Image (cartoon, rainbow, N blue to C red; front, side, top):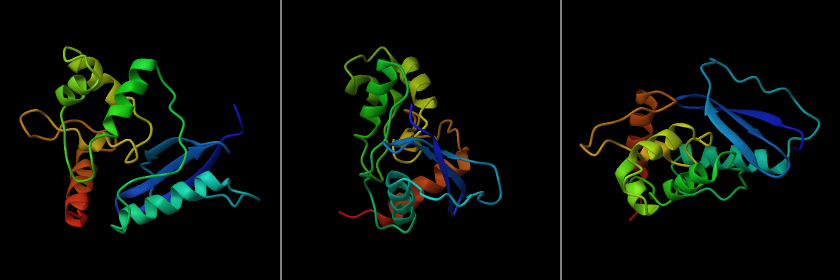
Length: 160
């Protein structure tokens, strides 16, 4: 694997740590640190800067889809689930069952939930858009308060 680079983004709901190579982004995760820890590198790969800029546009309500390169690191089943998650459009929600049906395995609800919980590309692979079939918020690695914030944020900037 290529050299791993790190870049922090200070979002309205906390520091987001971006990890990636020259080829793509591997991880976008919320950190519990209070401040960014960006160490000036001679060259930050373009893909990290693209991710940083697109996250900034997302939080400003300008961007609804992401176009930078990312790298899925997981099993084939996890990758299938993560790809299906991208079909849940901005400001919409779905359930584990919806994803199971979408991937053609409606009995795999628990496995879908497990794969969803292993997503390392927060916001971009929108696991925050998964809610319970009863309409209630379900777990989120970044914390339920962040999930609620992200859903409200998206609804406030939804374009028809």
